[in-house]
Image (tube, rainbow, N blue to C red; front, side):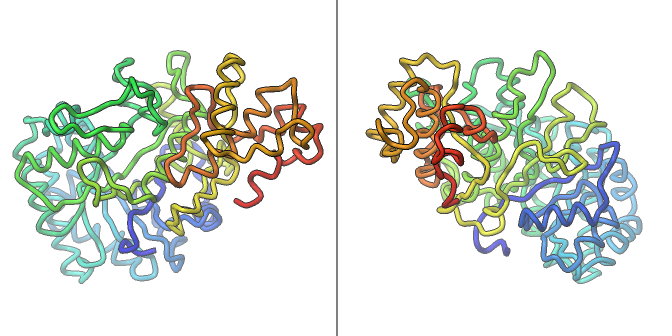
Length: 447
């Protein structure tokens, strides 16, 4: 898939784990999921060999522990390109090099060599006649922006003004993108209740909770867009334009410690599902409606050796042994057809802890103004269960969600619904016992 068809969604493969699967197995997983873009945090030669002749577009990385050497020696940079890029192209479709990762905020002592590293590597690409195929940039954390909200007033931290100016000049001259690790999870947790969880998860907001930029009167329905716009405005504040933002990491942890209440499977599934759909919609952001940022999901595998709280080891959608934690549709990623999300294995179900009166109100809305097909849950029909409002509500909610998701429909229903990867027919005895409902009333047959 070429960049010209619009924004894409790829996936990041980390390496900070005890048992890294064999490269050939990883590539088999990528092919099975029809994933067309992958970001490697290093330049693992076995991975680059296994990715040959697959057509998958590959971003390789210069790890932080190699940055000083590359940024201090033109010959070392040339050697890096020759051994890790030129030796594998064109069979392996390397299109980007990410130089370091969050250098300014994690290893500030190496900040002064960042731009020289970019320049030395670019010169080596030019010498190898690869400068048109391969672009170079460096991923930044959200922390390079001193105050991200409101987006219109965002600016880069003044500590890095000189280096950031040189970095942006390099991107402008080489036609490269500003690489950003955009993680609403950190924004939500760090906000300590300032922003609602729905805002971080791309879920619809209560009308009383609408979030707007007071300077532009633009409304933001999700934190991801606000982060992207804050980045664009920070770039513009330094008098640069025309530099696209490429999101090199965005995801949500599925498990956390006792104090990490937002790190759940439901939230991770909701975030990544909605993120994929949002990016592939090519709808842009409030201030950049024509600029949709391509995004790499973080990440394919759990990295059990990552330091920090429990959540840091649990961003993957799979365990390293290839067991799926929750299911994401990567077929959409390959085809870029937002009109057909086909989120196999994703269900919008009623929250069993919601008051029955609230469920009844949401059910009435889904079957009425929401235009869900509720014929099968009417009295006398195969999925009717008079004593199980959670089951029949789940049927209606799921039908509505899959019918309307491509046009912005969400799984919220005023907090009475949630996304899950568990088939509701395995949870509700009333659905299991009703023969025609064994497969959740065939809602997903068309997907």
